[in-house]
Length: 193
Image (cartoon, rainbow, N blue to C red; front, side):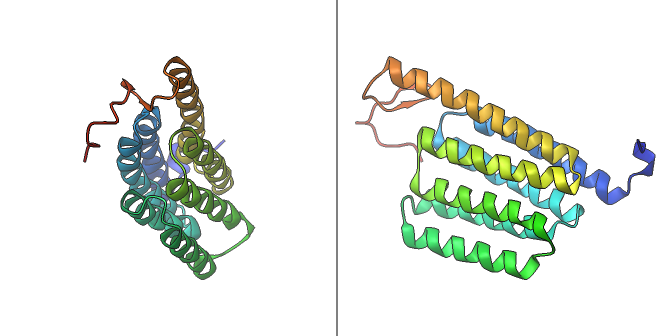
C-alpha cells in the first residue's frame, strides 16, 4: 500500500476537501430543520466541487457546482416544476460536455435524484431521496479513489437514516403536527427567514 509520501499534491488536496465536506455534511444531515440543511449543503458542496476538481473528475465537479445553484434555487422556488426541469436539463448539458467514461453515470444519477428531492419533497421523503443520491455519490467517490469523499457520503447516508428515524418518532409522538428538531412547530407563527 502506498504511503502518503507517494501521493500527489492534487490527490492529497482532494482527500483534504473530502474530509472538510464530511464534517459539514454531518452537521447538515443531523439537522431536522430543512432550511438549515440546505444552507449547510451549500458549504459542503463547495468542498466537494474542489475535491472532484483535484481528482480530475470533471463531470462530478461540474454537477456539484450545479448542485450549489440548485440548492439556492430550490429554497426560492419550492415546488416549481419548471425550475426543476431547467436544472435537470442543465445537469444533462453539463454531463454531456464533461463526460469521460461510464463512472460519470453516478454523479449524473446523484444530481438527478437530488434535484427531484429538493424541488418536490420535504421532510422524510426529501431525506430518503437525498440518501439515495448520497449512495450514488459514494459509488463515484469509491471509483475515483477518494477516501475522504467516500467516507463523507457514507456518513451522510448513515446520518440521514438516523435523522429520518428521529423525525419519524417525533411524528408519531405528535401526530398531525409539523415537527422539526425542536419538537412541534407553531404553524400560526411566520416561518423563519
